[in-house]
Every structure is written in C-alpha cells, then in structure tokens.
Amino acid sequence: MIRDRYDAIIFVPLNERLGAELVSRAHAAGVPVIGSNTRVDSDLVAAYIGSDDVEGGYLEARHVLEAMGCRGNVVILEGPLGQSAQLSRLEGNRKALADCPDASVLEQASANWKEPEAKALMAGWLDAHGTTIDGIIGQNDEMALGAIDAIKARGLDVTDFAIAGIDGVTAALRAVEQGEMTSILQDAVAQSQGALDLALHRLDPTYTPQSEIWEKYPTMPWNGGAQRDYVVPWTPVTPENVAALLAERSKLQDMAGN
Image (cartoon, rainbow, N blue to C red; front, side, top):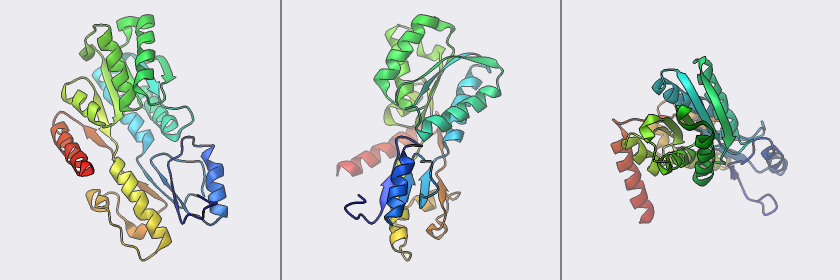
C-alpha cells in the first residue's frame, strides 16, 4: 500500500507490538493510518475506533462470576497471544476475578478465536477436571460456542455451566436465546464504517461523515472528526433484547445479499 501510494490505510493489526513498525513506515511515507477493532502499540496512528476491550473482558467475566455466586472454578479461552484484544480482555477478566477471591482459574490457554480449537481445549479440560469446572470465560463467541460443543459432546447439561463470550455473532445470539450462554455485542458495523469516515476526513477536512453510527451512539459524537480515539459502546445481549438483535442481524444480512 505504501509502495503503491495509497491515500490512507485502515489497519486491523493481528499483533499489538509487531504492527507498530508498519505504522511507522506508513507515517514516514505520509500515508495516514486509521486503526479499527484492535490496537497497535504506536502513537503514530492518525485515529482509532473500537470498543474498550478491558471493559469487555470485565463485563463477560463478571457475568460468569455472578452466575457462579462469585465462587468456584473457571477456565479462560484466550484469543491469539499478543493481539490487543487478547491482552486487554485478559486484563478485564483478571479485574473481575479480583472482585471474587473465592473463584479460581483452573486453566487458561489460547484457542486463537477459533471454535474447533476451543472445542478441543475444552474437551481436554473436561477430561482433567470434569464437572468441577463451574464457569467458562470465552474471550470471543466462537470459542464460547466451541466449549458448548464440547460439553454437549460429553452428554453434559450446558446450563450447569456459566458461559460467556464477546462479539454477538449470530450463533451466539441464538445460544443466548436458548439460555446456553451470555454475550456482549461488539458493533463491527460501527467500527468499520467509522474507520472509513475517519479515513476520508483525514484526506478532506470538509468531508461530512456518512455513517449513521454517530447518531446511534450519543456517547460517541463525531466532534468534527478531530479526536484520536473513538470508543464504540458494548451492547449486553440479554433475554429481553436478543430477539430484536437477531431481527436486526437478519435485516443486515438481507441487505448484504441484495
């Protein structure tokens, strides 16, 4: 992109530390970099839009721990090691665990955001610990769903475990509807459309944002596109709002299909 003289780059880094060199190269070439979804360890990013992953990790772990009565044993399924979401969500997980001194972490390992890897890990943990596992903290929904698959494969009752994930993917919304887990929705539309608005504003200061997200979230005003950080709020998925969220998801999928 730098060599081909792109005007701007929207960057979702896989690794918080290693991505910094790429941002430095783009900055030196005069190409603004807009961060979205995951952070990079660089102060040369022109602007960033994403959700607070420390808060997300805290919220999901708190849901699990509250369901456990703040006591018992949990396992943690982590994202790719070194990615900002994995690091920040783990910080939030630990913050919630610190509020519950009678809760212990039996196991934690990375399943790289992937459902099959999480299923395999959970199967091994069930072999080692059985039903002494009370709660499962999945740092994303795919991994929480993988854990659910492993539990069902053993013929165990999923509702005997407190399970949470992050993202609000469609399969997780359905699992919440069935009482199998909890989740918090990460607004990917807001993060992607917001990043595009911010990139275009960096190229033309008179640009007017086109996405409706700036009106959708009063706590995240556009403010002339001048901020360095824009924090997209989390939406807890509850039995009360899950049907509406599924209907909205179906509408978006229909629009994409058309």
